[in-house]
Length: 469
Image (cartoon, rainbow, N blue to C red; front, side):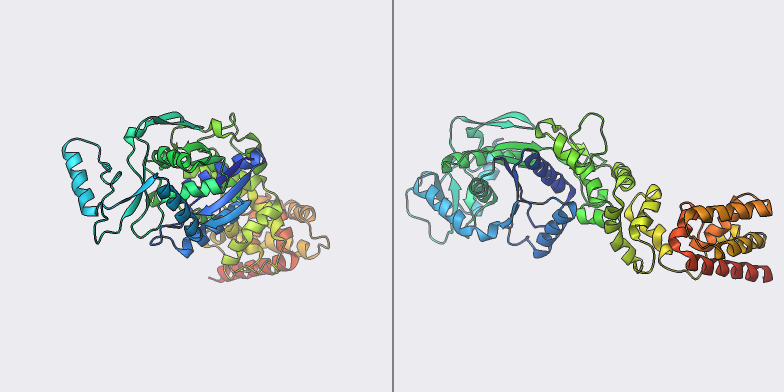
């Protein structure tokens, strides 16, 4: 069975590049009926935080990237790592290195001065003497000194590294804690990973890790190293390019499926198709089709994709994601129309859920004043007659639905022999407080009869006061 994993370090927030890696791993497992595992690589005890762990879990949950097993924490597995390290020592495949940091600095400076690559020179590789006093040794893996490592990468193609290019990797620090390269190999072995999909910044670790797998007698998984995501200036994506944490995109009103749709297309395509449902991503995705060149993050394109998903989303789904933004505006959703109906009405005009929420406030919250520009233009004395007539017609309506409301607006315009806009626009400002809304008949239906009547009367009072001034 195919088994993939996402293994973030909780030293910061779940970022966009990490989400794309998680998505590719998730899609590959889902497509092939496999399992997707979440592992938290928290061995960096100084930088790992509970806050970051929570942000990762919340981000994965919001995105809907459900995992079949986990989360597993590396800090819970130190005994297992120690067991593997002891086995490697016992088999002569690892050794204690007593070189001090100062000695290693001198060694590297000498290598640089001689124009050589700075690397550990193996001075304790075959050491059989007494352990130097006062030095807590690290443990190094005895990397093979001849032959080569062949990586048949699913994205990069074949990569060949000579073993003579690799020095002896530290697998346990001087305090006994395991290093990343050791723990990740043990975890992937124990958890039966068949495919390791990760960023190409890990590619230089892979030959060393393959040698570790072989030394442990473990089966080597297939690797796919995906290129990094760049900012629009061509540099690595960072805070200066905008939101980095995935939860910032949640706060900015992006739908999770829109963000995933955008990310799946950063380095992968299926013909000319731009908009994908989650099911379509699972059906069409193939890791072998991922581009080996870096991709550029473009916020405008993400926003456009979000618009498309807002327009196509199920109204109930939209309402679920919109509700927290309505609460931010102090809206009591029990005091107004069904939010799904409001979302359905507003979807054509909204780029984000933040936009939609701003445009939905007047369905739930009454206002004390009209938008200045709209009132100045449309709530003038000349509009008073039209507003009074439409008020009387709306008060007489027993069937408060868009069609009869529309007929009442038409009838008012005909009776007064004026254009529809001279009735519709003052009415729009009266019942919404501003000059922008969807069709005024549908809008009025959702706001409700009592609220609309009350607001029209408030507009007439406003006009009366304007006349007096």
